[in-house]
Structure formats: structure tokens, C-alpha cells
Image (cartoon, rainbow, N blue to C red; front, side, top):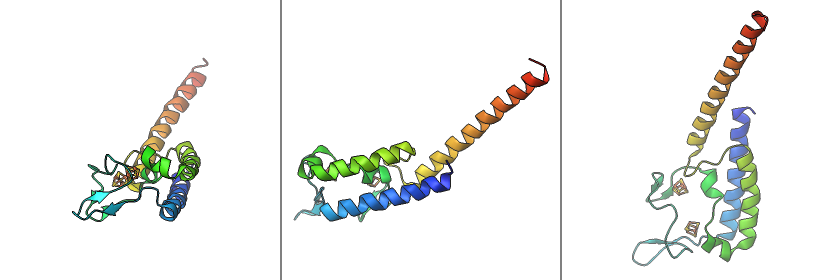
Length: 136
Ligand code: SF4
Ligand code: SF4
């Protein structure tokens, strides 16, 4: 499938997931009195250590991250977990799930996969042509 179309699906799924998260707020992310960022999980924010995290939060639109909530958030909002799971299935089908991957990362991955496929098809096409030309 066309990469542009897949990226359109990416944006659509991201927006859908973002609206669900904003509406139901399963993560309960907030700043504590001592300035630390806290959430529903006892072990801390799952974004910790990510290259895309800065003081204002996530700097990219990651559909994979947007569609993931941990068990602490799931217990809080099981209905949301099911909704996100349904969207995740669509994202997986179109190969849009990149762990901690930005929109740009996903686009680059799809381009690379596309080029690889083109090369493969080209090689297969040449092999078939050679075989036919040699009367094999
Ligand atoms: S890319 Fe994912 S893990 Fe990284 S900051 Fe954004 S939401 Fe968090
Ligand atoms: S998914 Fe879990 S660890 Fe990540 S922000 Fe939400 S509650 Fe915290």
C-alpha cells in the first residue's frame, strides 16, 4: 500500500487515540509538590529515558506510544485499554507500530521497507526474464 496513504492512517489513528487518552486520562500524569512528574504507575513514567522526552513532555507524535498504556493505567480504565487495543490492531496491520518511534521514524521505516521490496521485485523480475530468455 502507498506510503502516503499509510501516513494518513497514522495521523488518523494518532488523533483517535489522543482524543481517547485526553478524554479519559488513564495515566493521571501530574507534577508533584517537589517538581517530579508522577503518573498512575508506582514505578514511574514509561517515557523516562526516551530521547524524545523534554521538560515539556513528548516532542513527537508517536502512534505506538499513544496506543500503549501500562497495567496500572489499564486497571484504572479497562474500557480504554480495549479501545486502544482495537486501534492498535489496525496500526499493526499497516506496520505503523515503532517502539518510541516518531512519525518521521515510521515514515523512514516504511520508505526503507518499500525500497527493499522494490529491489527484491526487480531481482525476481530479472531472474524470471533471464530464465525465460534462456528458454528455461
Ligand atoms: S516517544 Fe513515546 S516514550 Fe518517547 S517521550 Fe514520546 S510518548 Fe514518551
Ligand atoms: S502508561 Fe503507565 S507508566 Fe506510562 S504514563 Fe501511563 S500510567 Fe504512567
